[in-house]
Length: 94
Image (tube, one colour):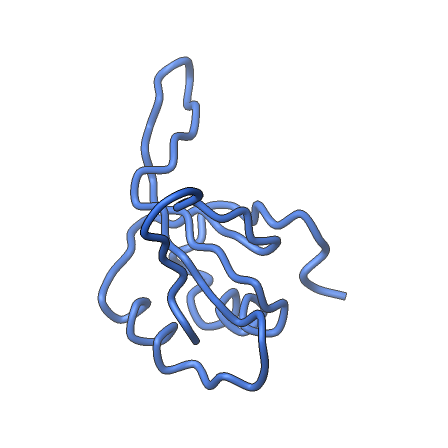
C-alpha cells in the first residue's frame, strides 16, 4: 500500500478504517508497505501520538488508518493481539 503523507495542509487524514494499537513496530510497518496495491484509495497512515482519555488522564497511543476495507480487515486478523480498539466508522466484519 501507499503511505499517506502531506507536505502541507492536512497531514492527519480521516480514513474510514482505523485501530488504536498497543505499539507500532517495524513488523506492522513492513506488512502495510508490502500489502499489494490493487487499485486507487489504498493508502494507510499512522498517527503515533493519538490522544485517548483514560481515567481523566490523556494517554497517547498509535492509531493506524486504512482507506481500504479489505486491507483493514486483513490487518485486524493478522495483528489482532496489537489492537486496543476498532475505531472504524464503518462496519469491518459482516
